[in-house]
Length: 125
Image (cartoon, rainbow, N blue to C red; front, top):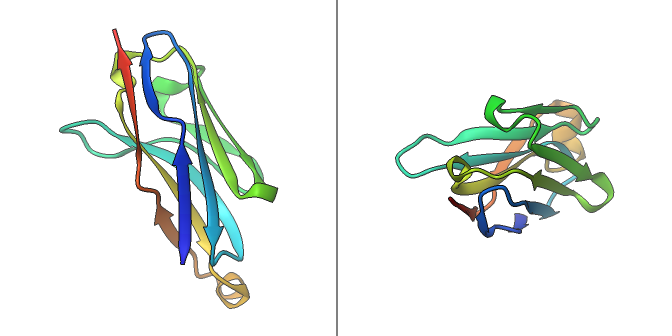
């Protein structure tokens, strides 16, 4: 069983900053990608930022230059630093990890994905 502990959401004024963290634990042999998604009311869930085990990152266009994703592989933890927040960033933010459960799944290439419960980010104008 996998657990994802998300933290760091909250209420902030426009132009402010927040940092989200996502710590993975449990039945994990190796984590491949980690990512942050968000879902605003009435909208589909979208990828905000992702990072591979090698540290390669990708971002949704609207957050480029404002958000930064990083990870600590030793702690199985990903971070999302969010600066210059805008009201349109308001959403529930979800962490996702893609991982191999054990050595067998690693060498057979079987990857699984797991979602966190989400953390609310609200940006007031």
